[in-house]
Length: 199
Image (cartoon, rainbow, N blue to C red; front, top):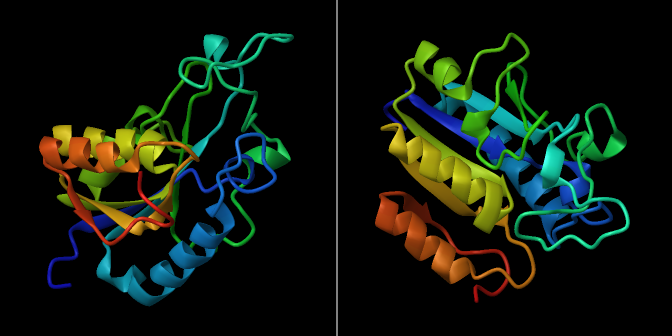
């Protein structure tokens, strides 16, 4: 890659979003392995690698109230509680040295990585601009939720944005094809093939 002003954003590859987690996505562990291999082989092509994570302290109505069922639209099972095993990155995800970790969703629902901050309080947008990043590649979990939201945010902020579809996993029953169409309509370039059948 000639222009190293591109960043790789790895979205929410955490235990609770992979098999066995409270919101486990089939293929999550496979994606963790695939992203690790990709980062190892292609990491030098990027000015920066970022890993986002849900890091919920008290996210309000994002979690379904105790004793009630989540609707999986506005309310969700409890997941990725800050400092819990479920919030840890999946053990198959090997992050290169120097990866910037962005935490999001402490006190509210946060789907986009651009709603989060690093340990010093800098927003993802600030971190990228401090590294002169002009374009981003997005990968991770899940395609139709946090991957989509992060890619749309990046595009709206003026970054040239690609979604690396073969490095993303989607939730069962999600309309992946509609997600792809929405992203492309917004100006996101979608490359690769989805993991599993797109609906």
